Amino acid sequence: MTSIIADDNERIEVIDSKESADGKFKIEVVQYAELEGATDLATARSLFFVKNSGPRLKFVVITLNNSSATLESGALYYMKGMLEVKSSAGGLGGLAKGIATKMLTDETVIRPQYSGTGTIVLEPSFGHFILTSLEDNQSIIVDKGMYYCSEGTVEVGISGQKTFSAAGFGGEGYWQTKVTGPGVVVLASPVPRSEIVAINLENERLQVDGNFALMRSGNIRFSVKKSTKSLIGSAVSGEGLLQTFEGTGRVWLAPTQAIYARINNPAAMQRMAQSQGSSNTTT
Image (tube, helix red, strand yellow):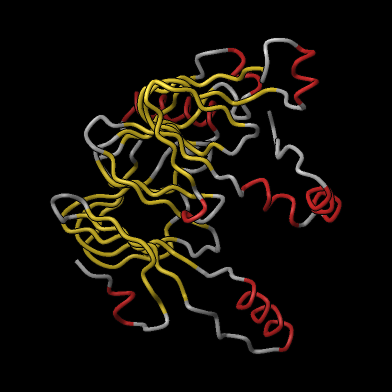
């Protein structure tokens, strides 16, 4: 399947794509090379800044061929084709589960599911997206608010923290979003995919000074621990609590996330220029 959007407009380019194994579901992230719609000087100045500073307007395009897709509520921009829409809550049990998910993770209670044959275009955004394919019963645990849309076969649920330290000091609360395959998933990312670092663990430990671990998969135990065994040692080392991942699996980090949060803060940027201090954000 090819994208009718990209084929019809040379100003739009596909920057990432995934397709299901049976070829019935395809998802693409497309972006405008630049915006040229200024009709006054104020808008023209803003667009000039956007063009030269890097942000590009993007949107997600889903192509269905007798298949289905689940979206975050309100994500639809427009659609074309023989498509039907229904709630993906799945009856009273599903609704109760959805309400629990909303209360615990701040995710949407009811997500619309589109099925049939056609094209779905989601809301334009200057944000970033991660596309990933999950195998049958394969799961990833992601930060709150990252889930954006997926193939209809994907289940979106919750995962509880295993320790009090992870819940109280991990930066994500007691619950996180759990996405289980099979199927293709689109996640909203705080940074470009090119700036994300994926670290594989083989019965190992990874410790992170800050809240910039985006997601994890496999048999990974998450907790928050002191950098040393004593309070005196922590004070001497200059570090405090560390997000700790132990086991076998993969952890995705966004090392530049904290930097973007500081760019609009001149004092924080000045401190970064003067010393190599901690990038700690939440822990």
